Length: 252
Image (cartoon, rainbow, N blue to C red; front, side, top):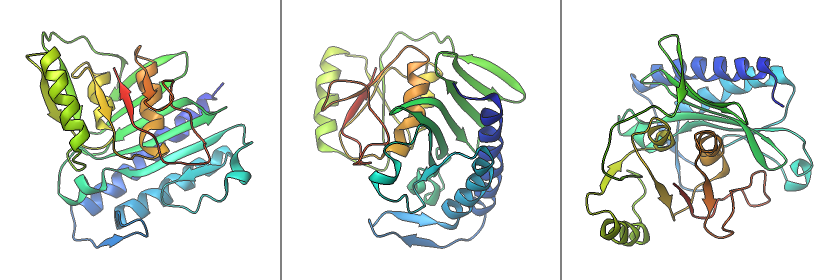
């Protein structure tokens, strides 16, 4: 079971990191290329430093996109592990879109037991605790998710920055099933937040993601009654795996 103090530390971490990210967002900054050819900015690195400084107070190990996370042998038996994406949606950030986020999850026995997604531009905090529900924190209000929305058509969320021919074919088939299908283009883990708010029904993805892209969102989905299914296993996605790259998945 997660301690409330850890929840409080994680929430404080993303808010402070978000403040630093926005300072960079509204300034001139450099864009670098990592070994895997993905972009990284000063904002990614400052956010990572801020989050690390906070989460270290919990005494638990941290697996972050922007850190050397060591060998599988050194982490496979860990009872608890933070999984962090200091800036999810770096391409959105670079292109001055507002749908980038910060993700933190706590993993126990290969399963997320706490998940947190923070949207800095909107100052919205989405979080879930296993077995206790999912919530939105905004303007000093705590709102249980999902929100009730009046909508008669099916809404599918897809990535802005990662085009995929296989996904286009899938959406074509989906449209045959749902003639009034709306395809909503949304960056980063904000797609999970759109589903949690009741603004969308499905998020299916075939091209690559990493554990830190989905761990927080998966628990958010679980706690509103949905699942994130690994398309290769047909079961819920597992975490702290040897291979940190996710298989394709679907949320619905």
